[in-house]
Image (cartoon, rainbow, N blue to C red; front, side):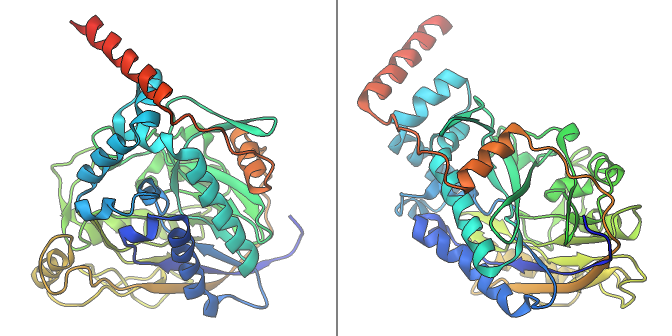
Length: 418
């Protein structure tokens, strides 16, 4: 990095999603563009700007091409119907790679969805001239073979991609610690590896990514700090009413209000850490079929950078919040807990799904970077080739021959199990 202090702006977008935003490529592009349009008034003309989007904003692309799926009202029903509709591609993959139906369903459409996701984000970074944390999406690991991609069998991680203002790839990061909803009984994703987490020096900070639950974990924060992370990015999709109680590993029996728990992530990393000076934590809201997503997006810093007392609902005000999205209302804890249930999916209440969207921004300064740029991984080289259009679309084998091969393999497996 060049010498001299870095002055830049960060923007966190808190959007609201709907299942219909993911049933076609055009709908997905519109939804993503809407978020950059929300950010546009806050983009800086005299300093570089980093825009941070939310976790799993590509997950519902599994609905693409199935406008009927949202009418099934639950993700479980939709996933089962989609698996049957895409049996010709998903079943052989499930049997060949020994993976669950839900992972096979996602992997069956992963290459076109990855291409759509990356190209959409690339075009937005270029058009708006911003550094872009694309959020995160379920994505395979790829290796480039000439003008084609080779996918690592069975692997599907919750992955963040960082882009520069020219649409160039800065780096990619996998989520290490998965929630129960992301494990085998839910989305069935593959955990990332702690030793693969890296920090990316840029004009908008030495960026380390800790996707959602990772920002709560000392091993992740410690690894990023050891590499000199100064700006922590925490894309989030909190799958529960914001004012409900939560219990997560290692002790699910110890429950607490979710806003209290969230103080252990970005806010703690910036107010009590070593190298991390700032953190950006955007959170998506909205009911997606039968799933509820809610939260309060925040930008945090050191207490001396943010002396005005602020905090999440249901927690006392404190220093360290540079910007904080209000929740839908304020009031006593019991009132807020009930309001969270009223907003939730399938509540039947008049306030159902009436969440608040928001955009936060803050102007930040840091000394010149002393972090070395990490070497590209083979997966990142493959993503870069996709971004530059150097990869051909793979031939699709959604044929009756492929289905027949899958059925034969399934019958053989059943015979062996008898």
